[in-house]
Amino acid sequence: MNKTICQLCNLKSDAAQQLNEAELFMLGENCAETHFQPGDIIIKQDAHSTNVAYLKSGLVKIHIEGSIKDKIIKITKAPAYICLPSSFGDKKNHFSATALEPTTVCFINVDMFKKLIYENGDFAYQIILDMSKSELQNFHNCLNNAQKQNIGRVADVILFFANIIYNSNTFRLPVTREELAALAGISRESCSRIFTEFNNDKILEVNGRQITILNDKLLRQISEKG
Amino acid sequence: MNKTICQLCNLKSDAAQQLNEAELFMLGENCAETHFQPGDIIIKQDAHSTNVAYLKSGLVKIHIEGSIKDKIIKITKAPAYICLPSSFGDKKNHFSATALEPTTVCFINVDMFKKLIYENGDFAYQIILDMSKSELQNFHNCLNNAQKQNIGRVADVILFFANIIYNSNTFRLPVTREELAALAGISRESCSRIFTEFNNDKILEVNGRQITILNDKLLRQISEKG
DNA sequence: TAAAATATGTGCGCTATATCACATTATAAT
DNA sequence: ATTATAATGTGATATAGCGCACATATTTTA
Image 1 (cartoon, helix red, strand yellow):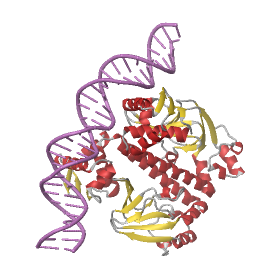
Image 2 (cartoon, each protein chain N blue to C red; image 1 turned 30 degrees about the vertical axis):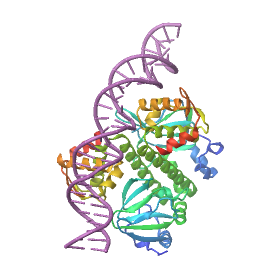
Image 3 (tube, rainbow over the protein chains, first blue to last red; image 1 turned 90 degrees about the vertical axis):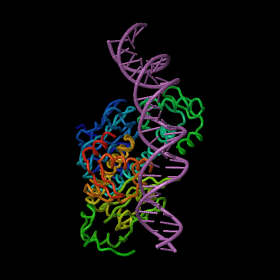
Image 4 (cartoon, chains in turn yellow, red, blue, cyan; image 1 turned 135 degrees about the vertical axis):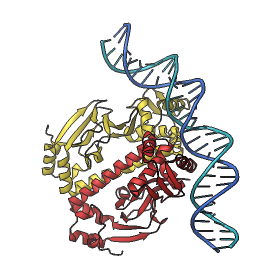
């Protein structure tokens, strides 16, 4: 396992910022930094999980492979631990994670991670805080998808990219229409039609994957009303 | 705040079982045991959250009040911490919790709870383990609801009561048809029709809320196929 | 640069399911 | 016991959105 120098890292997680020099050294000794290109699989569903994955930089999709279609659970940007719950308990990956942009991941030995939880209360608390926020976010997503109709879901996804991922009203989608549909939980065709509609109604300017939000207010209304 | 004697409690959570005498004493000093009857509100959505809620005995529904309809997120039986993620971070209840059966809840001061996380690594680790399992379960539920059609969702809910809650093929539903529909994410009418169908097809014997599973195998198939 | 493979757009019919309307039956309140 | 209230069942209707089929455009590979 390639060793990493965590002490010098300026992209530490909130939790790792609670660690002292000695703990950071230990962490580095049990940590492997790996780079991924778009499309590379970072975590493979159903595989044995022996490491905690910390997303140091980049963007990934968390997805689950069904019999036919792939369902995208969520899109996560750095910094974040990904698929943390899979690392505990049954030690099996419940989901896959695939890079959408060039991405750096630190794989941390799960026993070392546990040791840090046991020995550093501040670290443990930060992990719990992270998991709490993540879980509430997930619930929010699930409910949105459960209650809204297609147009609202697509509006949601666009606002998510604009506000959470890129902090800009102009951005290039990191996913295909098919993936966007899988994230919104709708069919590719419906997704396509809604993009056309948004473009015609001057809510978006759509140029392939290049998106500009023209009518933010209306888009929000659509997202809220469902 | 009524004091509780946690040392003598034989319904301790996995986490609390990691505590020593002194810690259990402290816990008891910052803990109020309260009883609820079916229909009683245990946690109110949007209210300020100052306590962690431990479900010592009984059964509750976790739900979110929409503008018109109520969506039931999940049903949780004792022993379990409920709405834990709401207690951290923004300290606001994101969901409501309502008793479905006579229920006992221990409200634990959140600062005491944090203190235990900071000071006892085994306690912290158990909490993380609990949250991990709970989150994976939630994901599973969300995905089911996202991908299955109505008949599969209803089959799911019935199997959930039989296998997870009551461990029996004969049981009395603790919820109305309307609530069951809100849990499955479908309309009351559709739910009603599916019950009739299951009864006609001799998959279930339905007598109001009294349910007997007659054809477990078929019910599982329906649940899996969606 | 050509060819193959993906990705995307769009018309059309079908079906699952929500919703309305109302009858009927339980349950709670007086 | 009797009324009021809530819960449940069921027919009829409307429609959102899926899936198919195929055209077109874009990207990748050879």
